[in-house]
Amino acid sequence: MAVADDSSEYLEIGMTATHSLEYWTAQAASLTIRNQAFIDGRYVDARSGQTYDCVSPIDGRSLARVAQCDSNDVERAVKAARNAFEAGVWSDTAPVHRKKVLVRLAQLIEEHAEELALLETLDMGKPISDSLNVDVAATLRCIAWNGEVIDKWYAEIAPTGPDELGLVTREPLGVVAAIVPWNFPLLMASWKLGPALATGNSVILKPSEKSPLTAIRLAELAIAAGIPEGVLNVLPGFGKEAGEPLAAHMDVDGLVFTGSTAIGKHLMGIAGTTNMKRAFMECGGKSPNIVFPDAPNLDTAAEAAATGVFYNQGEVCTAASRLLVHKSIRDDFLDRVVAAGQTMKPGNPLDPATRMGAIVDQPQIDRVTGYIDKAMQEGARLKCGGSRVLEETGGYYVEPTIFDRVSPDMSIASEEIFGPVLSCIDFETDAEALAVANNSPYGLAAAVWTSDITRAHTMARKLRAGSVWVNYYDGGDMTAPFGGFKQSGNGRDKSIHALEKYTEIKAIWINLAP
Ligand code: NAD
Ligand code: MN
Image (cartoon, rainbow, N blue to C red; front, side):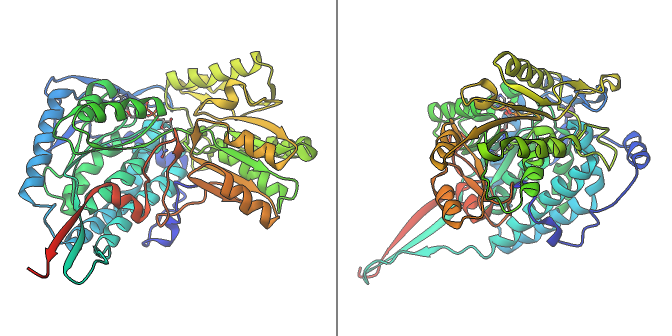
């Protein structure tokens, strides 16, 4: 998984715990859930007193009433963030200090790994094994990595003539608003928080209304780790009410977003018409996974084609949602993908054996089943799945669904579904595969399966995507940038390149011949 990273290498984490369903169910029953906003170092209600129902997609039951923040709370949080920034309690500290604090935060995340994983699973429905081994593990690696890099990131001296000295330095932006989605709630937040905090900014985090619980909990871990009051604020609430006033605020210097392309475009517009705050968007995708007959191992490719789109219930920005298969192997290969997909039947997310959990909420399951209906109307052929299941639980579950005979102009082949639905398209030539793959407003990721080194490199070079994988799917690590071409976004998360987004670059000139 691009989002998973090689977390196993990091810290001594007991992340392979094999607790039972009974264990997790009991833990869930006795869990204390924080439900307030976090402003200036303490938990507070929304000023309006409003709360909303946080529903678990596992069974449709309410987990908590969560503070529903609006522009008044945005005002308070921006003030707190600005004050902390101006006071220099974080922004003016030595990088080695910020490193120490962020590494401590990573350790606290590790110590609370089970609690955070459980909150994530209850809140958005992903399997508990993934919450623990992927989301929480990659989150702590991200926070630690950003801490560790910051006292190793050097400024530059411009190669000028002898009579002057040009120092090229970097400074934090100031107050950064981070608006994040629900599919990897904690991890997407950490991709912003890691570099934003490491570079010395104050941050206001707006989690998705669908998955606020881990962000709320993280705020007090940050304080415990030594992040000063006001430097990290968390505002739960809805996009229009809490997100938009943040995006429009004249005293917010940076706006970083992960979410849909529609909202990303909207927010860039707001940034442009207010104070020209730096705006970086990580948005949607419709990623092509291209299988040639000379793939090194067709079973491996078929397994990856299934997990690439069904992992996290298909709620992944890099989901391998378009499978492009060479005509000569199409039927045989699809049979193998179907077999692999059918091993991912949805089940109780609290069961460690479950590989596919619940869809985040009712509107999202309506969206997914709506696309399934549309695919049938448009003439695609259903190979497996296609139905909502486990309705007796009160939760939201859909079977892994595969369509073939999909043509590139059908809705399921061109629009992001964000659910467990695979569209199979066949091709005959390399040029045709490339043309179909690139014919999309998105450009987040792509994969190619081939043993031919020339074909692999040629495709990798010509695919218009921010990540290209050869002979696997969803590779990634903190050490490499992640993000999109075209309408999949701008800027990059992860790696040293992400640090650049959170800083202004400054040229300081010294006259050496005064
Ligand atoms: P979304 O755009 O609906 O919401 C994302 C966030 O924006 C949420 O916090 C939401 O409350 C907020 N928001 C909504 N309307 C707003 C407004 N008018 N003003 C300010 N904020 C607003 O997306 P989602 O459904 O939460 O997430 C799914 C999308 O995220 C998919 O398109 C997926 O591809 C994308 N995604 C991208 C990446 C990536 O790195 N490229 C990673 C994960 C998810
Ligand atoms: Mn939820």
